[in-house]
Image (cartoon, rainbow, N blue to C red; front, side, top):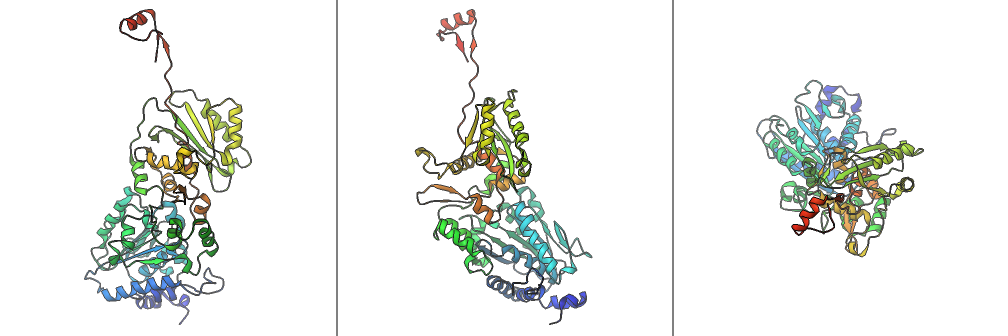
Amino acid sequence: MPDLAELPDGDLSDITENCVGDLERFIDLAYPWGEPGTLLEHHPGPDAWQRTFARSVSDEVRSNAFDGHTPVMPILRAVSKGHGVGGSVMAAMLVNWISSTRPHSQGVVTANTNTQLETKTWASVRRWTKMCVFGRMFKVNTQRLYHPSFPESWFCSAQTCRSENSEAFAGQHAADSTSYYIFDEDSSIAEIIHTVAEGGMTDGEPMQFRFGNATRNSGSFYEACFGKDRDYWKPLIVDSRTVRFSNKVLIARWLEQHGEDSDFFRVRVKGLPPRASDLQFIPMDRILEAARREPASFDDDPLIVGVDFSGGGQSWNVVRFRRGLDAVSIPPIRIPGEQTRGDRSAFLAILAGLLAERKPELKVHAMFCDSAFGSPYVERLKSMGYANVHEVTFGQTLNPDEKHCHNMRAYMWSRMKEWLLYGAIEDEQRMTDDLGAPGSHLNKKDQLVLESKEDMADRGVASPDDADALALTFASPIAPPKRPLKRKGPRQRFADRGAGGNHLGWTH
């Protein structure tokens, strides 16, 4: 085989034509497997499951025998996988294959959160396109891959999966080529996105690919992999333990921590759905509905503040406000952890300023602070005379009345989850991502256990600082403040006595 990197573009086109119906061959030819000095130096080729997947797709492409104008049935594939098996890599290789072998193809790539899309899924597309020998045919940036001569008709774009962006998935047609959609972490993508994407499957040689952890035991991803639609989607279930490059040390730790039969291990390693309930603790549909809801509160609802402190690094110091069902009207305060690592005084001044506020609409009735890095702040604020500051230990064992929750963190998130049925949050990507980030499971005592930040970090999920700050506002119920008692005049006291009122002369 000649060195493809040295071939002119015309010769490259001849080679890609031979890969139209052979995804596996394309993958073997397109990337510098095993070449010293490259990212693939220690990788002789794709993993076994990726080859199985590629052969399955190739077989159906050849069976369809698309002639360039007569529409064929869509190619539908779903992969339910454990953590770290290379799903985003497979998505990137699909983008490269379709773009390189199908002139004027049009594609959309999305993921369950904007963070996942930007830092993993689309980042993988960009990285593998740069390694791809056919990649020089295209331009690729943070939002789009396209052929420079036909940017409007030969492209693949990265799109957020937020419901209000559903129109970006509509109207995509390639009657003489391939219209395709790739969904990463699909179990948490809103159903409306899939419904709209179906409109792009009506002509040409359409394709849809769905990858993800089966965090839910319901919904369209579950149905595609394990339910009534599995015959259409021809699912592949990938266990992390069988994959060459998965983190076996981490898997061993999860096995010891959770047990092989736990829902956590089933979803994160085996690629299977949870038995008891959805592993994603708060459903994305509930989060997005709260983000679209108009805020509401009573005049006497107490203003409660939650403060999640950073220990430095990538995490943030976050202050969030909630009054009844309204967590929108007062914007959050967010300060990078690096700014408070050596000097806490500025952040302390901000918190003291909030507590000193006397305007009725801004008067803080309770401030709940995470004890992990917040203890020094709480101690200083109390010494300054602010008695309404409370320290909360996330890992604290609860009283007997809350035995259904493993610890304080699970209790607060559980209350927040119920509140989201009626409450309103800001329509902001960071917040919605954070709320949907943690998984959950039941321990041997049937107690709710929220996925630890350590486990979230191990699977590449950022610390949910904004959501933890809001959860802190549910640490303890706060009753509405009593209205001040007013002394009645003699005439009103006399009238009350005649009307059977109280004889003390006080009223609320």
